[in-house]
Image (cartoon, rainbow over all chains, first blue to last red; front, top):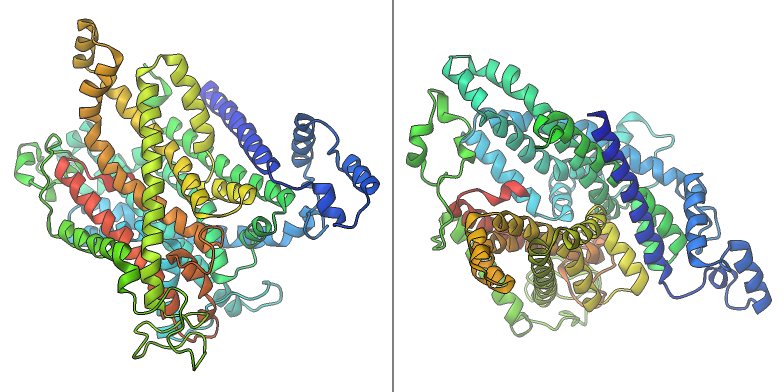
Length: 316
Length: 307
């Protein structure tokens, strides 16, 4: 068991290295020279050469990669090309904002959708199950900005509650102001991951319900509630943890569109700006943060799947 | 699922017969008769296909024409002459949706076709090649699969800029990784079947095995998956356009239309400029999903379980 987890961690580490290579060399093929961009058009050749030396751009590319990776691991993300500010300063506030909105979404959406999913698995084929399945299948296939627009239509246009756009930071606001601040982005993201979570947790429980030992329990006359909570759910916990981690990974990408939609001051707005201004030092830093979060969540999902399934733990 | 009487003998004495929902009750069949939801999906997809092909001729105004050139005002409400109102630059929204249909659907379809061509050829190739080739191809594929798709898209767009061919190639390559994995898995599964061993024992060549043994068996699951992949590609390309990194203005595209008109929400002016393109994407993808679900329910298992 332990050796398997260690092996999986090793694979995770290799993945992270591969990711860093893709991001570094992917942005390296950009036209333009970081030293030239930072100094502007009027810089003399000697100045540019000096700057190149200071930034380490005169070294061979593999050396640059190793330096960049080393700096990244010690928390130094470099200096933005567009604004000449250390990237760590640029992202610290926004990082906090993105984490707050994602964590809030996870805290609310995960328990609610697990409950809905398990209830759907308890009454498969019922009206409740059918409606829930229809709604979640439709939401899975619809883009995030459609869900956002529907919510704006209902809450802002029909009910007249507050504003569709998030403005400014969260500092110095009262409790109710904060709720209004986060309500729409969090609800949108909540719907986006809930539609997946409901379907997947329902499938996970139903999958367990298909196994012979449950049929045995049914045949010997164990009450339904007991079957679900004592027999099925305990064995579904592993797959459900897997499902949660997978959906938090979806959250990482969903948050980009939702932040832009509501003008939320998080990392996503920053990365889109970075791409538009071709600030590739910033893209490298932010890309690594997003990808690392994603890879770590996927890793947790994998380990949960391993830990919960003896057949995967002891492959034939 | 479609025919409960087939599973009757399985049902334990348990209220509502738990869990048999998910059981496959028949081997895949090739003839397809749509159910009601299937017909609804087909009707909506046909509608959008017609708009995509004939949009520029059906549209009341040009892509960037002003319906009311004498009274310039952004985000005008729906009225005679502009049934869906006007957008951020006072252009007719209905016309732009009609022009955008062809672009949005065309780009996504081209990208999905590219993803399928690459993914199926390489995936089946990996399945029939030796373990070494397979190992190398799969590891490279896994590295790309382990990245969030939107992030990969952002890096590519940052590196080489945004244009329609770049958008198609990016989406095609990114989703080829998913298709590769599926095609390889299906190919592998078929490769260990007895009839393939029999063919090998008869001394058939690799090409014969691919075309006569693997392809006929891999065809149906791959075709149903195509619909599912098309949905993801539509969502991916319109999300990139929404972020301002896909189709560039003034060209109309549903995703970028949502972005351009976001200002309409700010002061509670009108929601139509944002709702119309978002609803167009949603109806299209949900309709494709209905068809996919219906086809796969007909063939045994519900494919949307994979979403």
